[in-house]
Length: 499
Image 1 (tube, one colour):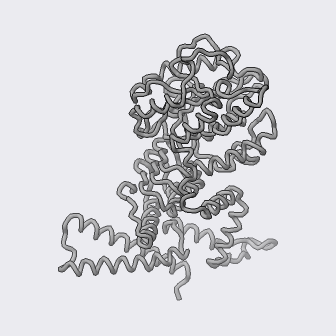
Image 2: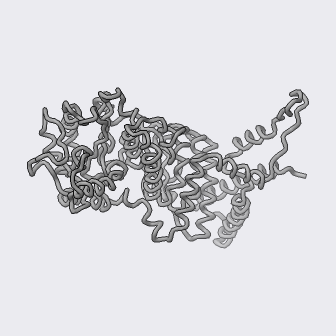
Image 3: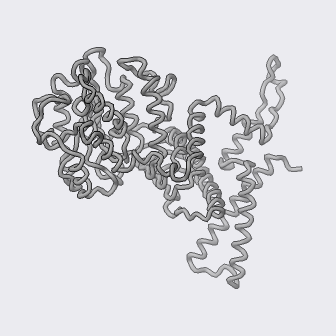
């Protein structure tokens, strides 16, 4: 009698054979070759193959085997069948480890997920979104991709909540220092949302860049973020050097967002100022996380109070992590201009810095990637920043329709990190991860994540190091998607979604 593992391997090989036969049929059809003596015979053969595929797919969907290709699966089987020593016994007396049933394996996976707080957080968010109405789901995260939502936030309080500096004026302020909100400024120093909207409408930006630059910087002293004008000079120099990038797209001016200049600072003596501050603060996540804004980072140097750098601080790390979520890769050709620029570097390094993998939702909680950052008020981490990043990321990823992560030199580890958060992208239509350096391990993780993404139409993978195992995993995923398509009558475009 054939073992369970043998049956799995047999089904896997059979499914691969069917996939190859269907590919051959399609190739012959496209070249005009007569497959059978009659049209009826050709259709009969296709139907036979597709019926066989559907039957195997039902077993696949039931969980009888995973998306891992045969080589990986056999290795996993060997590991499971390795003899495990019994506590207190000699290694030579060890007995083979019994194979788990499917139900037990699923139960173990659930337990592992419960032990992983990130997985629990993601599953909880997915369950919340699933319970929304169709109309509510369509609105998830749109504030981070829709230009109208950015304009609405910046125009809060009739434009009184946020003071937006005019880039063409800022560019001329050499030798000065950044004005504080409330300082007397000439009329030409500021720009309105109405004018920015009009500039954006007339621009030739194809990929969604908006005429708004947000500054992510640390305060050099407790009293003033830039007492000697160092940060001011960096901005002036960058505007001068990069002005041609904006002009090339027909952008005649931009708005500059700096917290010190844009929002009322403490002490806010009147209820009106406090209300304006709160209204402006409500939209501050959009400055950094919106897909259309450009974020300039001031990472060089350290503060004069504790000697902490940009990377040591919790709030600046929060702004950086938001900026890294859904903006197009600087290295990609599918962009209007570089939308994340590090002013702490020089020359090409300002835009060619290594972009890290997407941070998972709990990244700012203790024990996670950014959990050890420093805050002026230590309570800020757990009460404000960590939950704020989690909730913002859920919204940002839930609403994104295009992710451009081309040419980032990402390997398997970065792609595996991406795969962790991809299930949150319920409205993602286009995913570009071409010209990176990941191989089969990253591809298999990616496939496991995207197979349930009903909205995905384009998957761009060219220029990686994907081998036979990765391609096999992708073909199996396509087969699963084809079965879902047949049931739901969807017609995804896989023409550009191959390796």
